[in-house]
Image (cartoon, rainbow, N blue to C red; front, side):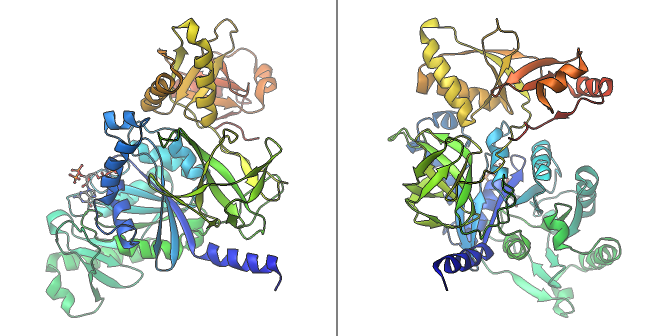
Length: 536
Ligand code: G4P
């Protein structure tokens, strides 16, 4: 076997055993709790509570995260790597706060699968819907975990209906709850034809085995309340009769979502979920590029930058570029091409990421994420590869919802202000838009959440010494004009909107509300507008 063949075989083997995903949820649905329990099964932590503790500990070691400490929240995404049943799993963690930022969207660009976590009492919530839209754009396979079954909630059938009606996804219940709240007795695994019994314990701190009984086992009636047992039989008959069978290809096309019920806090249903997730999740796949599809087992190493983060470690004042490996094998200190600048770069000091701790990393495979100290040369969406001949399409900007002029009240600080604004927008901390009126020089900061404004102002002050003033603007929707300035000129004068330009001088329309957007679309059916920025 040649060396190339050996490498390809090694990569194929690694890809088969790698799965990566991000959790999408609304704050409080239980993402931290579920993450913790998954890590517990993966042996990455020994006792639940560790992720939370780590989050708290992190505050002591990171100073630009001072803001996080003040607000007691987590702003940044991190990557958690763990092993289970022979698989290497990358969990791309996203900020949990309500005022989340574009980081969350970009992280989904690096994910191969998403887990939609829903609180059984609340069903779909606003942030879940927004994140779902991004997953839909990427046609990500979505697994659903309905959480907090140990508490009273909405009927399972009603939740399935909501997923189908509101998201247009076909739900397929993989397991079915037996009771709920105080009456919760367990779940029925529809694939394995087994009942998993719920035992009230001490909040599931350790990973424990569950009592499992087969369908038809005479002990069923002894274990289950007879009313719930008959209810279960009726529900299953109904499901078997009307619900579509599970179809893994429909899952991979982003059309069907397998639904699991459980309780992350009490550790119930988590391992069952993890086992099915590993069986059905999409492995790292091919990626579109300027030279066609790049398969993961392409012998050339390639990847793209999906996130940049400054000053994670106050002792070094560093910047870290997070790269999703798409193909080939990454080897520490390898030399790669950087097509955007045409330069050759040595990828030294790679880091394996476990929350905020960074360990040195020797090799990585498709589906993995590596953190590289970024000497200022990377931008969001950049491709790196050993072949250097192709580029991935990059990561679009998503429609911001909050807009404000960012003013510098102190003329002597104008240089630092400019530098800060440029660097923070390059890093992708916030989007910058500009007025088409040349006399208005102040940039417009455009964010997905209020917190992004705070982060930008805080960082301009603490890292660049530039104090700033925000002057809010009354818009809450942005749309890129497909076809650019010529397309805009063709339609002539527009009402109910204002035209600005993005950092790449492309026209963007701002609207006060969806009504105004629809008005413009009705008046100009030929004008094509997009909620995401055009890719190169
Ligand atoms: P998030 O990251 O999505 O924001 O949610 P997080 O895991 O922090 O969970 C939010 C709250 O919901 C926590 O309660 C957590 O304990 C609780 N929770 C998570 N999963 C379950 C579950 O399966 N059942 C029940 N009953 N509760 C669950 P908290 O009171 O905010 O915190 P704590 O005092 O429990 O730590």
